[in-house]
Amino acid sequence: MSDKKSVRVNEEIKAPKVRVIDFDGTQRGIFTVRDAIKLSEERKLDLVEIAPQADPPVCKIIDYGKFKYEQQKKEKLQKKNQVVSVLKEIRLHPNTDTHDFDFKVRHAINFIEEGNKVKVSVLFKGREMAYTEKGEELIQRFIEKLSDISKVESEPKMEGRSLSAILVPQSKKGKKQKQQG
Image (cartoon, rainbow, N blue to C red; front, top):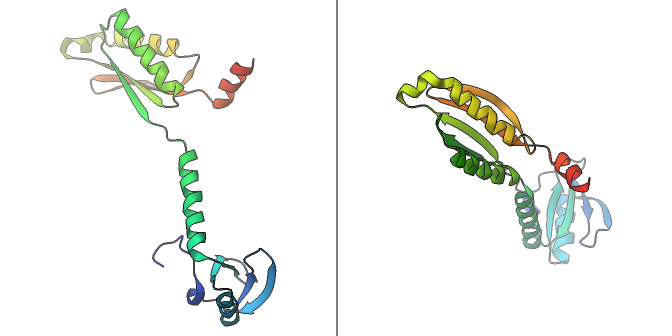
């Protein structure tokens, strides 16, 4: 019972009276817990509390092992359908060549199409700190190249010796409309 999600079974049910649903889904009525447990034992099944917040709590006569298995299956399916956004980083330098720049843009496009966020960073070393405007131009060019598939989540800003901006995929509605149109 240490788990918040765990359900009460048979003798663990604390309510004095419960609403009982049979294994085939038919309503049996309101019983005392003791009578409901006897009813479930006659069918060689368990009495499982499925709605403890109801008044009186709703219990179902089912095979608890099978019930637990079904719950795990549902949770697994929910986890599978959950979208996880990952932050990918692309690092540039103020004097990055055009070929390298285009190569990194292609990588960023792949990341965004997969649904990931992209952090674009221009790193400055030594004397390069005197030419931060070169880095700003580079980031603006990068953002422009990706403007059709992404939007800027955080504007370019200096963080120590690097200038960074975060790009996120445009809304999924926009992608669907472009594909249909």
